[in-house]
Image 1 (spheres, rainbow, N blue to C red):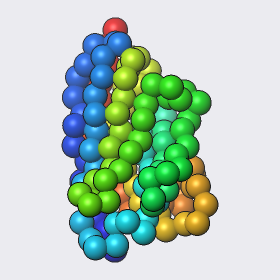
Image 2 (cartoon, one colour):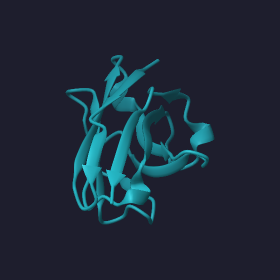
Image 3 (cartoon, rainbow, N blue to C red):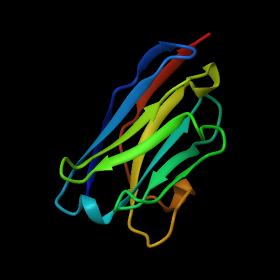
Image 4 (cartoon, one colour):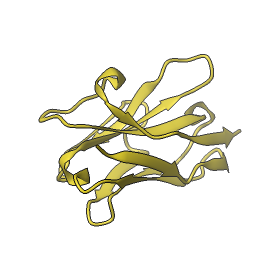
Length: 124
């Protein structure tokens, strides 16, 4: 079982950038697909991006495509979310999550392991 801890959230102006990190414990990190999700107040948790265990295949929500980049470093047991050109509507708590799956998974209900979340606030 892997455990996850996010970091890197904060307050940024619209158009700015942040990089989130998700550190995982456990020697089997490289066997998991990793996803980033976000949840704004009063809204459901939504998919942001996910990455295959090898790091060679990624998928993004349309709302962040071209602005966000997911990556992973299996040697450091860490997955990243580089967020550029941030907008006020990106404001949310961001969560990383892990799942063992041979195919891309964008539905939060299939992810078994979650971090505690990190707040991202984008001011206009």
